[in-house]
Length: 440
Image: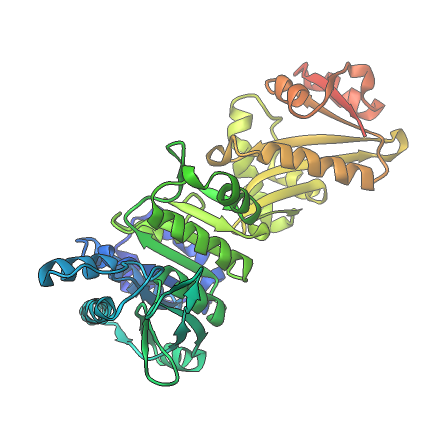
């Protein structure tokens, strides 16, 4: 390996080689960036919590900053049962009476201490300070919410001072006002305010559900626009209230500048690493529009493009292209990225004298099939062809004819529709591909 790569921490040596390669692809993107990890109280008590802290130690060894925000709903419920009390609210969104506030303070302090103990056990330093300034939620719809609060501001100077000294800040679901009064806060909302204030690149919710589901199907990738529609029109179909709260706050985070928000099951071993260091992840990702981007290919993408088309060539779906051919034609290629990793490609070849352009080498990573990526590539190819003055777009296919006709709006053509130089190569290949044509 080159001398510019950092020395690998001992935690990496324990991972499988495939895992190591996947992680190393992401490290340059995340180094010296900040993750906010929001942990439900139930996850702190789970047997996997020790493994989560080891994962956080790995993140820190890769120079990725971490702030931990935690909840305490499960602990408040148990403490209330032990003391024979009935809490007025468990999650910091309803009314918090004086007795429930004391339960919340006691339970939250206990969870904070358990986290600090765990950090010490993984050779990490942690600290909890009064970084969240709160004010009372006040009277909402005619009801005084008493000691329920809202975040007024986050003391970023304090949190950044801890991070600069290699200390993991731990933020409980509590906040104080200027008079020293404590208020109960919703930890999901606190995590958003901390992530926004610190300009975090990721916010990860660790809960007891595997993500957001609709009709029993896990929603793996949801754009801001899609999340808005789901919450407006399909709220009742999105699972339990705890997940709905996180989904709602995730949308707020994305709107307010946090690029990626993840909702995952914190009980899954190595789930945190699988979510942040792989394209697929294990839960639900809420992302801003920049998540998927089509861009012109560069020479550095040749290897990725060759890997993408390899399966298509083996299945006789695509024409074989050597690395040298790809390098010569790289100016015609485009790649679609997910988290800066190419997962699809296509090429647009121009024939200016004929007023035509060819859509070629459309290929999508099998892990991203049936997600509409093929149509995005076709639509982008059409726009590129128009920009180049083409009046007609054509493509050749052996096995995806129905897709191009039914989904892409192409019609069946003949070899006579090809430009002369392309017709010559078509005849030489002997593949007898179907010609498809679309007017622009």
